[in-house]
Amino acid sequence: MPQADLLYSADLTIDAPDILSAVEQVIAARDSGAGACKGRAYPSREFHHSHVTLRVAMLDKPHRDDAFMGDLLRAIEAEVKSHVSQPCALAVELSFSSSHYSTGMHEGAAP
Image 1: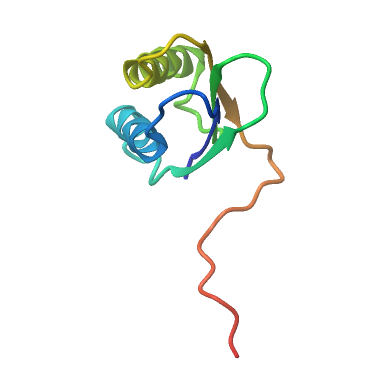
Image 2: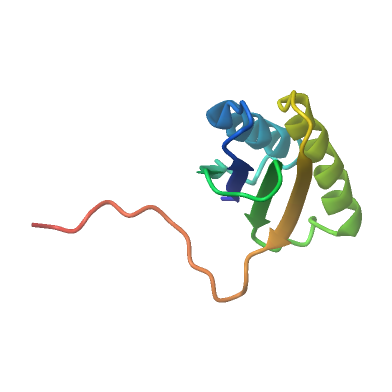
């Protein structure tokens, strides 16, 4: 289950849920076993330069080699750029979660 964090300066007109959904679709199209991508967006009211930064963390799997990750990076970057109409600094980072990372669904604590 990938995790996507979208950070951007609040001066930009950004449809964050749309971008995060599109990123999830790009990942799913290339990696059917990735599952849902948990996305969060953080607009910043205080900033020095207009910017969009997307960070995607995934579990390290054998098929996610350098070639795969490079292709995925280019596809995600192109998708994000297609959703940003204003000039800004734009960065996309793909990384692997550490081996000491746990993920899953929490059903809530029993009363």
